[in-house]
Image (cartoon, rainbow, N blue to C red; front, side, top):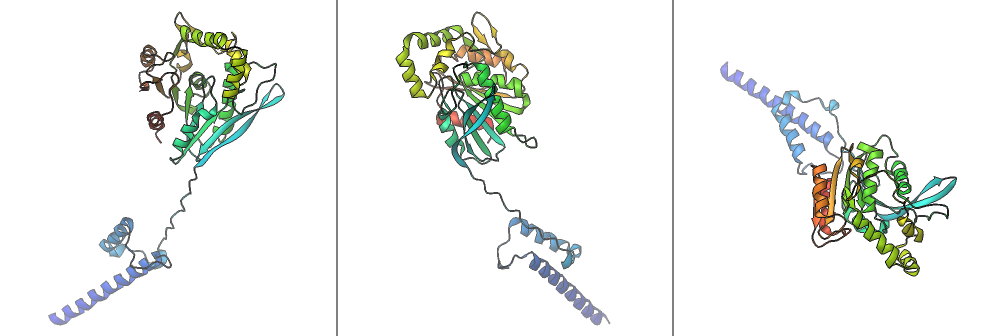
Length: 344
């Protein structure tokens, strides 16, 4: 009887194994995409699934219960080249346009807003636009302040002043960057000189909605001597003809240059002492990160001012650019520093 029992046991075992193999073949057949050879080398995830099935054959679901997971179609990320757009601003019943250049992934979470210096335009940041086009999930926006570049000039009754620039930037941020309440972008603001000062004041308006500000050769204090030297050169060394030519070359309204010398041009609150204008209070309640790029030979953002800023902001990230004055140019190392700060 023993041989017969062994023979029956062998046949039962063989039938059971055949059944398992048929179930496995059915399962794999349903997972197999049409037109794909069954001899295709499985991926690591497919191999792991097969091993798991073989180790626990009795746990296999019947063929009609197999769940087929269809891979989600990946979104094709298109990095758009720099393109100029316009934002309409209502000002005392009048409409004027603010020009801005935008590039990169239009649905990106990482947004870099670039604010130019006193006599600069958004074209100053074209190097930044092109540098960040190689990254996915990143968008760059640069702006022309009123009276500069492709933005409208103020009428004769208007005065170019810091509060005007701050209001225009704030409206652009609300209308273009923070327009969707359901999406919270990671916003970094890069400001050169005057643009850096405006970036500090923007933290008072938007708070934690700004993840980081990066200052280009502007610290928390600007010396009176530096300001006087700037104003003196603009007033005495530039005649009427030179001002007109400079304005034409830089695409800046002549009055945007002359209004800088008016007492009311810097109409934002600040603390003054014997050394100069202090912007410490603008960052008092700001909890985001701050980066500082400064030139080795800068007379605006000196080593002394950098060290003072580090005492106020212990976690300040800095980059000194050898041989550079004011402001710092956007060389590859500078672009890499901005990239690292953004974490893209």
